[in-house]
Structure formats: structure tokens, C-alpha cells
Length: 172
Image 1 (cartoon, one colour):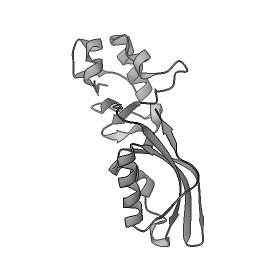
Image 2 (cartoon, rainbow, N blue to C red; image 1 turned 120 degrees about the vertical axis):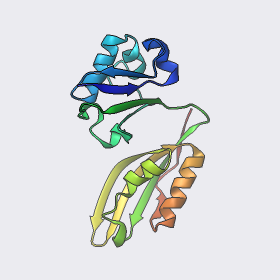
Image 3 (cartoon, rainbow, N blue to C red; image 1 turned 60 degrees about the vertical axis):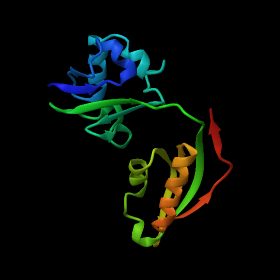
């Protein structure tokens, strides 16, 4: 089963300068293990010492972020394409903690999924509940200040009330 992995420019020196390499694996973890076997050096750049994917490494399977699939257990099939995208440093990353209040007509909509797809932000649901015809989500949202601002404006534009929970966090 041939899986194609797109290699970002900074890591191509590990695989003889190739932009795309082929590996085998039934799931993403197996494919990445095969990548390491064929081209040693990828493991230390993709995984931390605990075996977890590094925080600033983004991986997509067929253009879908694995955080919205099954993570490293995302199943793969012949012909799938995996893209490794290192986060680009630039400016400080900010984390907002927000309450989102959904009106009844938006409760069943995949708003947080859309938020992660439309903007360069990473949503992290801390809690959520639906009572009657109101939805409430406690959300951490991280990204650049510019992207966070755009994301919040979009939420408010579609009818979601956005309120801060507590002081924001700035990560260097």
C-alpha cells in the first residue's frame, strides 16, 4: 500500500532532497515509522521525547488536519497523501479563553471545525453544554493576534456571542 508523504523544504535534506516520498502503513503512525526507517532523522524532528507529535508540527491526510481525524491513528489507504507542515514562527502566539454562546439555529452546526479550517487558529474545547435552545462552549483559541481577531469577528458575524473567560496568555 503506497502512501505519499509531502516533505517540507527544511526536512528534504533527510530524504535526498525529495519533495514527495512513498511509504507503507495502515495508519499514520505506521507510515511515519516507515518514513523514519527509510530516511533516518525524521522521528526526532516530528516527535518529542515522550513519543508525542511535536506541538508545532502539523500533519494533514488528504488535506484534512489529523487533529480533526484520529490523530496518529488516522487510517490510511493506498494513494493517500500525507503533508507535513511545520508551523512558521513569527511573532508571539496568543491564547484566548472564551465563552461562546450559540443561538438555537447554530447549535448543530460544526462551527468550531469551520473555525479551525477558515483561520490559522487552533481551537481547544474545554467544556460544552446545550440547555434548551442555547449552546455554551468554553474554548481556548490560539494563534497570531491578527488571525484571532479575524476568527472572533467571524464568530460574532454569524451570530455567536463571544465573551472572555479570563486573562489571555502570550507564548513566546
